[in-house]
Length: 279
Image 1 (cartoon, rainbow, N blue to C red):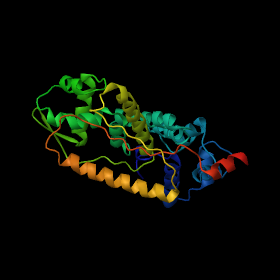
Image 2 (image 1 turned 60 degrees about the horizontal axis):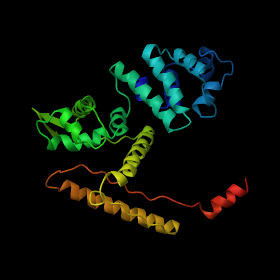
Image 3 (image 1 turned 30 degrees about the vertical axis):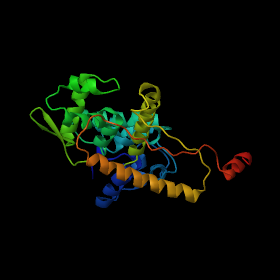
């Protein structure tokens, strides 16, 4: 059975634990539940099916019944908090706690590196700057950033990206690699939404911070159908890919830019309004 730190859903871990015990013995849900200190013989089965949930106290009992201890028990209990989070902020904080527990004990968490990379604007910007600033100190790189960042934060970013293989260091020079971090777990939409919010706030600041010749803002308000929306999304995706090729073929980096492609509704659908009025 995989280590608990390779899971992000405590129900999946519990089900795998049960399946493994069942495979080598006559283990039953009744026995599992009794060992966890609950009276209902099917309670944990219902938990694994998503029909009920564990409380913080229940998480401690079940974790102990599965012979988890130390940081693994703490990880399991935090995983329960993560799964029950009510919003992105709560889920992000819980995942950060899971990541810290794992790192402090020198084990990896699923998509942990991707989460760390997209958690802050610093990593993508430093990854673009460092290769074109050979011999520069972290302080020198920090001074090139429009947003405030310390030399220590840049140094940590560089170390992280070398460790994960996003950058390759040759003496005092950094080179980008072909490696990309793409997470597949449900934490990735959370951290990507966080980055989009952060970048959107930078975009808002740039309206007054930079001259029109240094930034480009256009907008269009339009009434369209669902079919039109899909066509526009395809056009935006194709445009983004063409711009990516321009950047990849660039002869040099004078500045690092961020491109935000935004298309969002300003009104509700008529049926949405009708549904609200009928509830």
